[in-house]
Image (cartoon, rainbow, N blue to C red; front, top):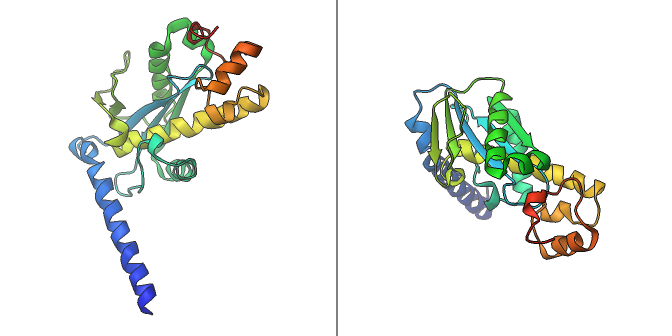
Length: 219
């Protein structure tokens, strides 16, 4: 092996060691609650947009086979999120998704709709969790013990995994909606109130996936 290859391998080992260390640092809550067999991370995507559903993810990760590079989904590139989504779906003990649409959001408000999506995600797991690690919230009407963690998607691998599942699921849905309702830029803006989105909204009016209660300031 030449010096160049040796140097490349050395740098790769250092990168891997750093990532293992970072993953261990993001597993402190999983370690703290390791007495529970099934630890489930919960997070959501889509509380703020003007259009589309709110989506929650629930993920039980394996204890003996860590998935590397998990992080708050907003800190990852789209390509990295997609790759990690596939890895989570392949290796997680269980994955659940909950989707609550714009009509229901208008009916019960975004916070209650988020809680509903989270309850759905938990109910869609094939295994009942023993404890929930939630990103910042305590979910009403759930009997499983819960630990709300502020900025949990950057502090817990389980919550980070749930944030990736929620975001990739929702982004894919918004790309589909873009084909159904062209012109609003749903594939790129994901339903958020970008300048182009708001201009189109004023010019063309809302479509069925817009949250009417979110549009009062624009229409």
